[in-house]
Length: 277
Ligand code: C2E
Ligand code: CA
Ligand code: CA
Ligand code: CA
Picture 1 (tube, rainbow, N blue to C red):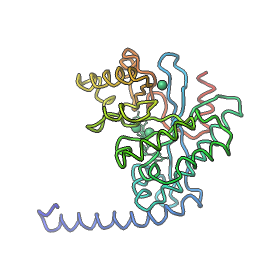
Picture 2 (cartoon, rainbow, N blue to C red; picture 1 turned 30 degrees about the vertical axis):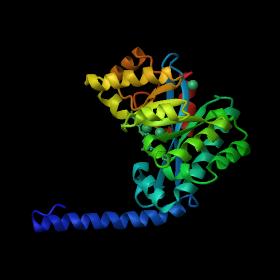
Picture 3 (spheres, helix red, strand yellow; picture 1 turned 30 degrees about the horizontal axis):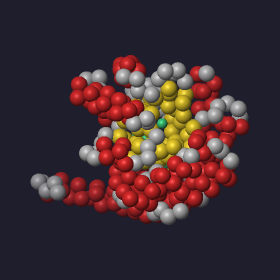
Picture 4 (cartoon, protein in one colour; picture 1 turned 45 degrees about the vertical axis):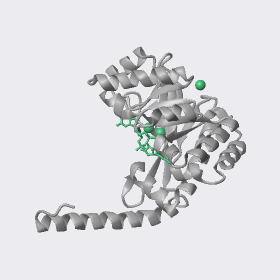
């Protein structure tokens, strides 16, 4: 704890107390946010590096708080995990994504896969597989158009259960993405033991790959290894042309990042897609 000048410490503590209080308020409000229609889904396109076409979309959650404005999922997802409201929120996200898939399909615009992010508690929840199955059936979408993204840290929580759950999800036809790949030490174990379809290389390697040889080598290695295992490899956080050029050279399958598009509301995606195709 910072305790040099008395004032400084006091200031620090006061700020911390305020943050904690704010978090408590947010936690309480999170449980009502779904009912109050404060959530919105944004979509960020992924592109096939060979054709340059949109290959799928990632659904990213936004919370528009009535007082604080947009709050980042980095800040509220952990709180929702802690209180358990992530279960209800996750269910809303699942339904929203499936409805969107159906919408795009029925508009005849595009038969587009959508990926959603799962947190630890969601994946551990009993009945998660039937929840996914039911939602797919209710909306009547093709199950292979839904992808579920899970990070290594999420998979780590309860390895046995997780492996079983992922196999069950795959059985329904859902595709499994390992997100933020390479950020943990045991990464290779995941490739071997988990039923994965897609690897998403963590943004930190993409960020540094132009300047640092080591990061570049890691990126190359993940692409080669993933493809050896029969998986598709995606690079996230692509922000400039040089990164994109290298990724194409290394034959990375798909790219996602601000260079192409930020996450945007579904209506804007429609325009974007029509423009591009
Ligand atoms: P993530 O799954 O790794 O998502 C990628 C994040 O990187 C997104 O942040 C996205 O907006 C951002 N991003 C995309 N392209 C670029 C780029 O070129 N440069 C940079 N610097 N960033 C880029 P976002 O939307 O704020 O989401 C943050 C995290 O919150 C996500 O990380 C995911 O772990 C979590 N999250 C988002 N939506 C959901 C959800 O519906 N459920 C759960 N459980 N978690 C979610
Ligand atoms: Ca993700
Ligand atoms: Ca990620
Ligand atoms: Ca495959």
